[in-house]
Image (tube, rainbow, N blue to C red; front, side):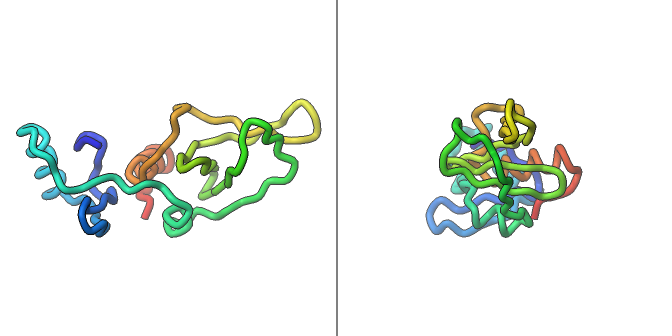
Length: 134
């Protein structure tokens, strides 16, 4: 993680005691300075989990008749009009559309590598919806 990925309001955690912190202007400035001086800082990104998705207001959804040959052990979450798929500790923005038969298909939108950390989810959510994800 580098300081350029972070915005005020993003959540990170302490590397040692795993305490969650919300980035503010002062901490962001400190992180930028550490990076410029090539000093290591004591925070790390928070991996996305089902707990984080639910605590930030996403709802688990179940869509019947999904053709899921490509994906196993996934879970879908929705907030507003956005649908995310949680698969193997990575979250993907997805579109649900018709398949060749009566089923529906999951299509990954954008970056095929997905989102691994809470601050990435917060940033994409803000970019798409214009509201903070808290």
